[in-house]
Image (cartoon, rainbow, N blue to C red; front, side):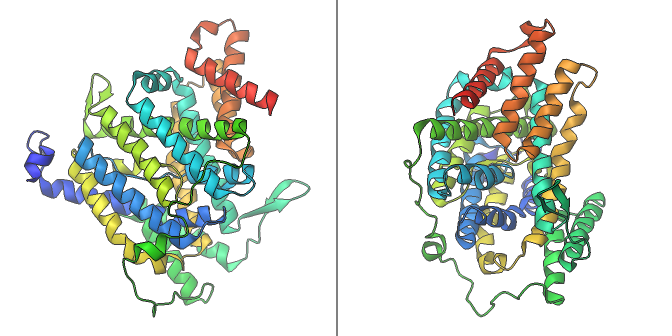
Length: 431
């Protein structure tokens, strides 16, 4: 059955290799089960329901990727996407997270249409490589900033914008230890290093009385209905000007396209699944991703996207990897009561460490070409400093076009980049 479904022999792999790879991928990305509820709770959403929505959306979309696209790629609510949702979009919509979920659903619907047409591939291929790398790095810096705040390493200041937090706070020390544990285990190539770091910090918090123990008297069960009810099908589509909603939907769509494209390409290269520079079954993969975003919004979470941690499943080549990950996400539903007891300063190290995986993209920028380097730096820095991924991307694209035109190199500007830059400038001018 497995051979028929996944063509294991044709890909030069075995069921055991694929299952081991899938288990490895799950443990490298399972931190999202703990981090996503914390981030979306800042938007006013019920963390327990978000946990359920995170597990179910990740399970459904990853199983779909394995069974339909037959690719070793796992998906879940995206880091960076959830931060944009909670800290930019929801405040913009006057705290209406239900409307924000509606925008996520609409962006997923548009992504489905684009994924089935050549338009999406044209637009993504038009974006300069330097900007793709800068966006990834900028999202990494944004995550680090949120992690610093969650750990208590920085605090707001009316005079200098930011200032050091209480560096002697035991909670900050616990967060620092968690980060050091993650880095050390990752260097030793220990599977699940990020998750182990979160668990270590949480256990220490329990031991020293910094965090109350979870209520273990409550039964662990697959109670889908009551557990997910606060967010399930709570999305709606009205309550803000059309111009604002359009900008939010397009921002979500843009982030999804860039994130998914980079991940699919990176994992495809590692697994040897590229043909003439393109990933096998790429349209099926994009349909899985976009369908997952719609399902995630209906369940009650931010955009679902392909995870770069899929690359951790070295040796995995088929959809059996993804099916393994999906099954493990379903099994994780029993952890819902325990997840609620994980403190924010225990998940902060995961945000900071994952930033490393994103920030390394900057090494690919052509720093010797100022017309590429300056826009890349503007994008990477504007995302965290404006506390908005969409604004940072827009600033970077406008800078790219302006520098190229004034340098007499306007022919290097792709139509797709020009369209995005003009759209962002118009948004700033008329809103």
